[in-house]
Image 1: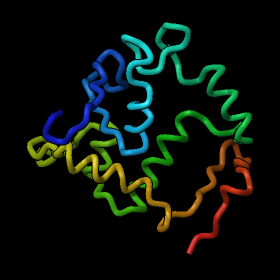
Image 2: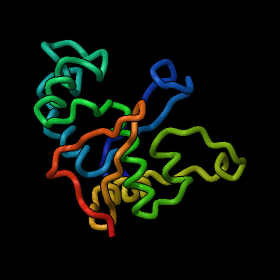
Image 3: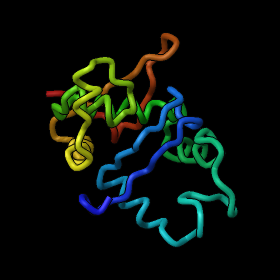
Length: 155
């Protein structure tokens, strides 16, 4: 998208939960990771041994969780974290819905599509940590334990 100097990922309908195309907007942190991958493979962004990665819940994810001491964290928890950080940063619900790929339920939302440049700015707000605190999710009645360095007091 030359207007904003970035590429976006278009997720095809067959690969998206709601069976409709979705445009994934990346914040600066995600964009820098994708940029570092450019040119390492002629086709795929994150290949494994020259093939596309078929699932997020793979050996690499399991190893990363183990090494970080976060065995109870699920892939979907990353999505929840992004959504919570957007909300804590004051990102409007319409923009959060667009960034997370939620279907728009209102006609106003249908006709007033979000601006990609604005969404990139909103996604970057999730990178600010000054106004947020760690929220522990309770799964199956047991709290998820996080590494002590990740816990902070809420104001």
